[in-house]
Length: 536
Ligand code: F6P
Image (cartoon, rainbow, N blue to C red):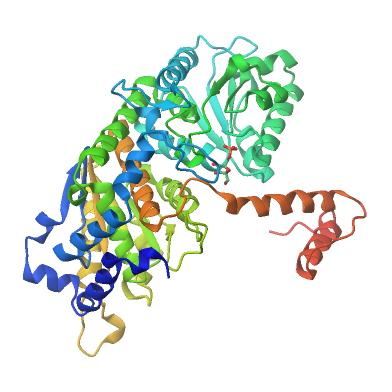
C-alpha cells in the first residue's frame, strides 16, 4: 500500500466520504442557502463557484491536509525555482518563466533564463510586426495574407485554441490555418484555400523530429516549389519554432528564421513560448504580452494564496475528491462560449498527457486512480448531444462549465439565452427532479459542477484561465506523486508505426505482428489501389 493511501488525511477522507455520501448537494444548500459565498472565489480575474459539489468545510479541510501531507507547497516551490522535477528527463519545468513579469532571475544551470526569454519575445515582436504591417513579403513581393502553422500536440493545440478564443482580436487581413494530422486531407484542405505567393508556413516542433509534422512540412515545401517558387523562396515563406537548430537547418530553414525555446518547456505547456508565434501573428505582440500577463497574475495567486483560498489548489482537490473518493474518473469541460470551442481538446493534452500515469515518482505502481478522462464540447450544443447521460446516465460525470459575462457581439438576447442555459444546467444537475410514478422522467440530481466565469474573454483573462488549469494539473500530479511532465507512453506506438510503415512500403515484407495486425496490414496493401466504384 502506498504512503498516500495510508496517510492520515487519505484515511480521514475515506471515512468522511462514507458519511457525506448519505446526503446530497441539494441538502447542503438547504442547510445553508448562502453556501455559494463560502464555496466561491475570485482570483486573477477568474471567478469560480464550486458550491455545486458534494463538499463541506470539513471536506476542504481534509483535502488541504492531504495536499500538505503530499508536499504540494514544497513541490510548487521546487517548480518555480527551476529544480529538475521532471525526474525521468532530468529537466526543470519552467513554463512560468515564459511569462515572468517581475524581472526576478530564474536560474537554470547557473544562468538566468529570463533575458533569453525576453530576447525571443523581442524577436517575435520584430517578426510579427513585419508580417502584420506588410513589411515582410513573399518571394513575388506581395504581403502575407495567410499563415499556416504545421505542428501537432502541444505545437498545435495551444496556439490553435488561443487563436480561436481570441478571434475578436484578430488582424483583419491575416488568416491563420492549422495543419496537424498526417492524414493528407488535413494539408490538402488548407492548401486549396491559400495562395503560395502570400502564404507563410510556421513549422512548429519542439524536437523537430515528429514524423507527422516533418511530412506535412515537406509537402508544404514541395507545394511551394512545384507551384513555381524558386528554392530561395523558402526563406521568405518558412519559419521554424523549435529547440533543435540542427534539425531545422537540415530541413532547409535558415536559423535566422528560427524562433527558439528550451527543453525546460514541456510541449503541452509551450504556447507561452515561441510556439505561440501564430497567436502573436493573429492578435499582435501587445495582445500576446497581455496573455502572458494574465497567466503571470494567476501564477502569483497560485504562489501566494493560502491553500484554503487558492483557486488552482481548490479545483485540483475537488477533482481528487471526485476521482479518488467518489470514484468519478471522467471530467467534462463545457465552455458556454463558442470562441472556447477548442478548449476541451487543449485541456485533454494538458491533463491527460500530464497525469495519465500509473507509476509514482518512487518507481512503484500506484494503488489509486490518477488522471481523469477529459472531454467536452461547448454548451448549448452539448445539451443536444450528451447532456442526457449527464442527467440520467448510470455514470456521474463532474463538469466545469465556463461562462463569459460579456460577449464580443451585440446580440444580447442570444447571450442571455446562452447563460440562462449554462446556469439552468448546473441547477438541474444539482437539484434533479422527481416526477411521481414517472421514473423515466425523473432526475437523480446530485451531479457536481464547477462554474467558472470571466467578465470578458480577452487575452489577459484567457491567460489566467489557462494558467489556472496548468496549476490544477500540477497540484493533482503532486498529490498523486507522479511525474506530470514526461510522456513515455507515446513512444511505443511511434516505434511500431515506423516499423509498420516500412512493411507497408515494401512490396514483400515478412509480417512479424499478431495475426490481427498482420491481417490489417495485408488487407490495406491488397486493397489500397483497387478501383472502388465511386458511390454517393
Ligand atoms: O504527443 C507526444 C508529443 O511529444 C507531445 O508531448 C508534443 O506536444 C507533441 O508530441 C509534438 O512534439 P514536437 O513539438 O516535438 O513536434
